[in-house]
Structure formats: C-alpha cells, structure tokens
Image: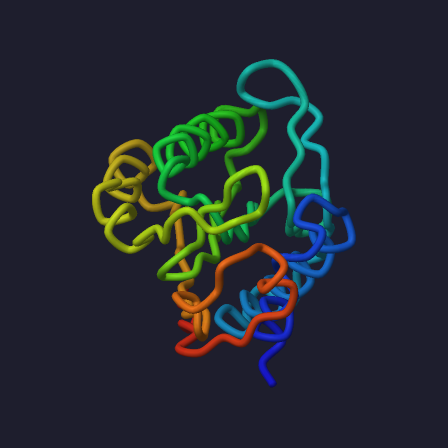
Length: 194
C-alpha cells in the first residue's frame, strides 16, 4: 500500500496531533523526493524555524531543505479532510501571506522552490458540533473558483507553487457521523507531480 494512502486511512483521527503532523511530513517528503531525486542530496529538516521572515518575525516551515546552511526548498503541508469549502478562501489568503513571509525574508536569494502541498478528498464531509454529517462539500468545485497558482505565478515567477493531491473516500454518502470516519478506505489517489 502507498505510504500516503496508509496515512489517509486514519487521517480523521487526532487531526490536531503532532504525531499525525509528523507522519504527514515524512510521507510528503518521501513523495517529493520520488518526484525530485536531485533534491536527495540536500539536508532535510522538519519544523524548521526561519529566524527572520519577511514580516520581521520568525516563521515555522514544515519541511525545509538545505545545501550546507543555505535554505533551498520550503514545503508547507496541509491535509484538510472536512469542512473544506467554508475555509477555501482563508487557505488561499494564508498561502499568499506565508509566501510573502518566506520570499521576502533576508538572505533567501538562493531559494529554489516553495511548495504548498494540500491533500484533500474530492468530496469532504461537513460535521455539526454533535459529529453528525450536515453536508458534503464538492472540494474540486470550490478549488476551481480559487485561482491561487495564477496569483503565486504573477508574484513569484514560478518559485512558489501550490500543489493539490485529491482522493475519494469510499462510501462517503452512506456515512452519517464523524465516528464512521475513524478509519476510511480511499481510492483514486492522485499522484503528486512537481
């Protein structure tokens, strides 16, 4: 079984835990290096803190690559799997702001790539406070109305990109409660192309 698929099977569990985040970062780095084998020679760090960002503060980068001590690649990862549509514009705004924090940081002239990698189901559940499903989001439709890469290309000439990986949750329309998502089966997992 694919390592990303293995992660996604339990991705609705402990969605805010550092353990889940660590697993996501390891899996994504593996996928990135499958796509970009020339990056294998870099030294990779998880949860790297940029000492000074473009806003004058510090900034945490999920996955960072270095050549000696020079920052070369930044990866920021998200695996949002519920209530995606209501937050889609906020995700775009966050991506643009985080891009500025990295791209306008001092001494970033040798930065090769900044990737925002998001993993989403094509259809995502919306839960109420009791955990009942109150709707199903069409994530592809919402993402198609948010032209984030057009803005990033205009601002950063291809150095910064957003990459989306989609999958289907088997039987999503038969489920009625959050508890039924504790372990899911997925299909049609996209390949991450960089």
